[in-house]
Length: 586
Image 1 (tube, rainbow, N blue to C red):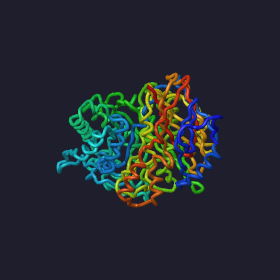
Image 2 (image 1 turned 60 degrees about the vertical axis):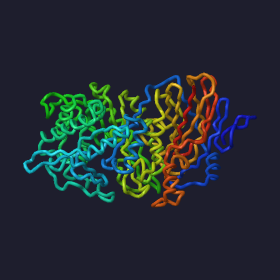
Image 3 (image 1 turned 30 degrees about the vertical axis):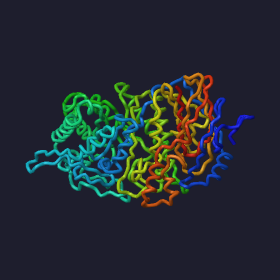
């Protein structure tokens, strides 16, 4: 049980979860737990959680900032670019842009693929390039403009991926559009779009005309704020030629962009994983090699991008996440960049950073996606990316979440996505929590945090990882807490005692707001299950699900007292829960 001060009764209604301040007391609303996708009766939860809870001591020191709390979460992406202009895609783009207007970026594959814009799984097209009977280029920007217009009118900017190869330029154009399904082998996506161009001058001219068109349509100031990179994972399935041929493809494309806009931000290579020797070969070429397009030494490299993925498995009837693989890949990528003195201050983008590698794939090991396993993983992994960046003293600019939405699919179908059928999933609300954190990052210590080195070595397979992130921005202190374990199985609450020290507000009244992602808050999946999992919800049910998918404030804002710059709080934190506490003062 949570200990109560002697001879004192909690203020407010009694709901089972009490926050003890020093000296005031406030009460927060209790929440149920989600265990392996099942809703457990509230009475059972309350009894078991309080009886079996393990103690956690956590401290935030506001007097020792670690540096800027960087919004590394602000990038997203998808294989299917055309979804952005469809009903639910437009809705979600608007929600992403609202998080941090004009500083949220979206990366999409298939932007230069031939076709009429009809989307399909792991496919998209814009029909930008074709040729007449004499081989003269014909450019058509209508579909691509529609995609970028959707981004920009909703506060989202392009992370412009230059690819893939138009049918009329490919050295092996047939077959071209694939018909991949989740039941097919992943390699079946590889068709004519994955090959080099038959004419590199035409390839460069296509990219030049595209960038030039963007400058004319959106203005130089806007376009120079974008990120431009060539292709995707050219060390993997996506490129059917040697590394040297990719260097040539890259050089010609970047030369085209820079001819249209000399101040364009260009980089790469967005490798599969850290890339090892392949990435080193690319960097060496950019820093010291002869540019295939210009004949000069070097290719501009304004940012370096690589990918990092986890590796979930299905064991003993449940999902086991692979956060160790994810963080080891981040670590390896940072090590590569750090080894080049010329790249000391160059921004790094983890161009895809996810629990596993295929958003459109399905399978038992991917059963974590609809619920709170995904949200708790996201909170815990983003914190460790920041920690790794500090350890390596590298300039981590962003970690891009490769998840969006899939149109015309059943609700909660098991794809890796932020929303399903226009209904936000719990993971989307982690980004809404991140949005409320700014200013300086503060150190958080927890006696139940699993160390970074232990997570890299063996994941979170023993005791759970209960820890937090904190930020201070003038008169607002935010603490994000999570309770994470690799195994998607039942576990007890954590009874957290949280101490906030050295707040730059010595004494007086402050406001405390709490948000939660768990079975009963910010969770449309459990709300849908409680409805009986309707395949086609009624209008009233759909409205309820939309509401359930939004970030939920728990109870009303509370007025608390700060004494000598300190506050102490106690609260249970359910397995897989993520909680945001926001303390503010005048």
